[in-house]
Amino acid sequence: TLSNNKDKKEQQENGKIQNCVCYKSHKSLHGFCHSPELSTLPTCPDIQPPVKTVGPLTDADVIKLRPCEKKKVDFQDKLYLAPLTTCGNLPFRRVCKRFGADITCGEMAMCTNLLQGHQSEWALLKRHESEDLFGVQVEGCFPDTMTRCAELISNYADVNFVDINSGCPIDLVYKKGGGCGLMTRTRKFEQIIKGMNYVLDVPLTVKIRTGVQEKSSIAHKLIGEMKNWGVSMVTLHGRSREQRYTKLADWDYISTCAKLANPVPLFGNGDILSYEDAVKAKETGVSGVMIARGALIKPWIFTEIKESRHWDVSSSERLDILRDFTNFGLEHWGSDTRGVEKTRNFLLEWLSFMCRYIPVGLLERVPQKINERPPYYMGRNFLESLMASQNVDDWIRISEMLLGPVPKNFNFLPKHKANSYK
Image 1: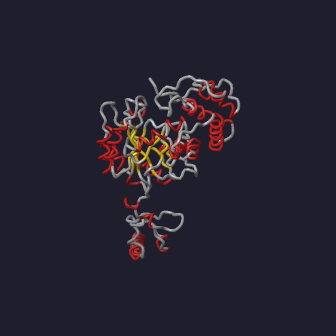
Image 2: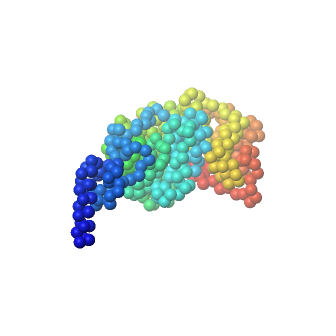
Image 3: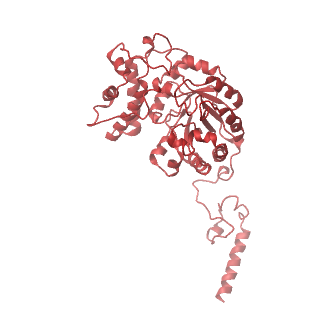
């Protein structure tokens, strides 16, 4: 008798579910049902349980954006500050924004570290309010993890675009199939791009090199395919993995690739240290230029390019720029002991590049070229000579002018070499 009563009760409840006004729309709305009748009933096997939402249900919750409805970004004729590992932190990007950088991008973030929730890795995705066109760069080698990572970025980060790093030359990344390794794994590369593109509502861009081997360029083959995979913009560094940062970038090859990429915008990258270099680069037919080491050596390069002039920046002006950086650093990392030393460390990393700048007023021939070894010289005053030193102790002295004495037994070894010559 009890079992018969139970069966009758279940039939009555199922009848209520079938007669519910929102029953048919239940599946399409992923279980959002507003019927008070259903809220007290047990979950039907064919119906997903209601999901709590904040605010009213909108179309955006249940309808996927079509590719033509994705947010658009105008990349044409912009100056792009490259995603610089270690040095491309938020305070440095703020300095470059003041000097006229149009596009900024966060440091390369490891996909696996983001998925594991590493706080230090998620910090790389943070943007400053002055960065009006900001993207993040992600490195990874598996389609499933990269797609999931893109989904998290789309939901939890405030970005205008996402960039895939397929140009990183370091062994740690390359040997596991990431960075430059993706260029030789086209099937995986295609799956990564299509998967990330599917879940993102912002443009997906890619940064590549000419190839892995110096005399075997493969970028031109990839670019033709990437147009069909749905990439919104390509950045080409005019060197192979083997070359790293030695020898001049191949701008003739970049010009060929820019024609192949059309109508997808292609940015060129390599050896830009003056407005004359930028003018020559734009003559190759690229949509814009990306500046990396040039911005580290002289962050005012963006102003020089936009105003078409050589700017003789004095040592006191350069010290003011460094002072702004330290203030931004203390604001970002904190003004306690830990924050001060973190700011100092990143300042010293930057000084390992900035010491290569030769003031325009001292040059025999203008402009300075990025791959010419700076000679030893005496500046026009003591501070200028100090800033030209490639001795670590002198960089520490500059940091002490801005951040006070270093702790006892302080030692600094730059992650990047202070120059790019063998």
